[in-house]
Amino acid sequence: MKYTSLYRRYRPRRFGEIRGQEHVVAALRNAARDGRVHHAYLLSGPRGTGKTTAARILAKVLNCADPADGEPCCECESCIAIQAGTSFDLHELDAASNNKVDDIRDLLGKVALGTPGRTKVYLLDEVHMLTPGAENALLKTLEEPPDHVVFVLATTEPHKVVETIRSRSQHLELNLLSGEELESLVRHVVDDAGLDVDDDGVAHAVRSGRGSARDTLSALDRVVAGGMQGDDTVVTDLLDALANVDAGQALGAVAAGISRGREPRVLGEMLLAALREAFLVAMGVPPAELAEADRSRAQAFADRVSPAVITGALEALGTALVAMRRLPDPRVDLEVALVRLTSPVVAAGVDAGQIDALTKRVERLEQALADTGRPAAAGSPPPQPPPPSAAGPAAKARETLARVPAVPPSPRRSEPGPTPGAGAPGAGAVPPEEPSVEEPVSVGDLPTRDELTLAWGDDLLDLLSKKARARFSVARFVAVEDGSAVMALPNEPHLRRCSELLGEIESALTGRFGVRVPVRLVVEEAASGGPGPAAAPSTRPAGKAGGEVDDDVVDPDELVEADPAEGSAVAKLTRAFPGAALVEPT
Image (cartoon, rainbow, N blue to C red; front, top):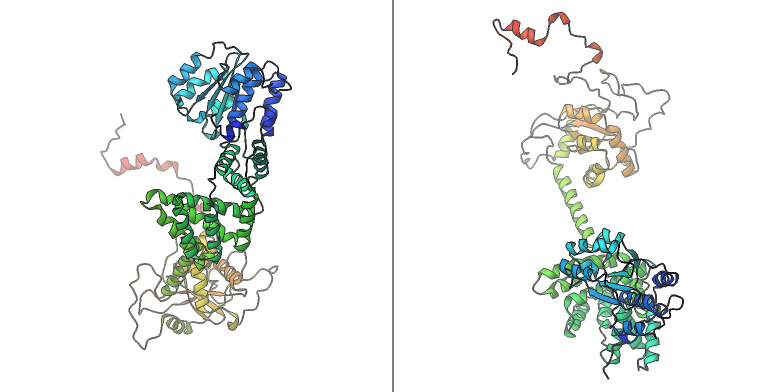
């Protein structure tokens, strides 16, 4: 007698025998029992979860001679014919290979024909594979089929089914089975068929099934035939290598897996699935279809490493799997990824993205330190190298500032600045309701110039408002003197504009260093060897200085109406050019 595979021998014959799909079973059985069967159903779900089986059972009960409570009897001639695949009442069509317009037209041409039973059921498997023309050809008949016709559409990718078909069907979603349900199924089949399978074989079948009843029984067939391999030890060895930060162990596990006939991409996918399980276990949401052995393995790995290591490994392996498609030897990408994952830096929880961010941060700080010796004014010539006895730029700025009387910073307030002409220190009255300004902090409490430069080049400038970032982008700290941080700007007009936002700079510095840091703005020398910077208080008004002219300010109240007696502009032009004539446009 010809051998029949286990998943075919133990395919459910009634709705009550379908495991793990109670919601689908209830919908179809109640509809058949109450006579409310829809004209079209769309069954979607992963492979091996019972889509085709549910459609065949529905065809049985709709044509059964003696149905009971929405279940077929499985003994009448119609049920036996459907079970054997010889019934004219059930027409199965593989839409993956019959996806053309002509195939659908041929099917629709036979829809109106009668059959021996009460209901003709059309089962279109993998319906998402239909071409757009075939889908359009199916729409009208699918919406209004003959009374004796029921369509059942099955697919593993419902998102690829056009909305016009989904809206004409009753959509039922099937899900993967849990590990407990699969183990119960396997033990039932082992007992009923009298198979000699131990607990390790049952665990292997459940693990291989990954939530699919058909795949689980196929794996059980392989176990019975003696084809069970310890492939899972490869994944266990790879997880141990990642936890132990041992690149040699990882490469040895890959070599062992490839010697057993596994492709590098398959090994990478197996490790990726194991890492995902460990990540979900670490987050407290283990997959329901996970077998007990896999759950224990995932929990053990999650206890040995941090979630950052797991997520970094997931990203690195995902990138390697994508790159494998373009390489002549995909093994190289997998091995390189594993070597990187077993490096001490990644094992400490720092992934490649964090390393890049830290590298860029160091480069910004080095650039900021290098810029402290350059003039910030646009278009200024590069500085000449100083003689050996000359002081550095910071010392030169200090010498220049020593000749200028220090001016304390302006108090922070929301009112406009002092009136023009109040250039003396402390000019501009503070409103009575404002609290008095805090005592300046001693110089010893202030950060050094290098600390200010590092903070400014790190991220302090990015924390300012958009306006402040634009105005202070060329500013730099040159010294810390007289209880204030001295900030240099290219020219006098720029200094006056920046003084309006000085309070925001001081607030940012206070938040960073925990002490009040007054800021004094100065004008930087325009070129190397030029005059030194001149100190400018933060309360300096936006008036004229250094011979510069302010922008014209127009007061709308001073504007007057034009004199109508003067005539229009055309009349004035005519008077200005005697003999000229106005030419009307054509």
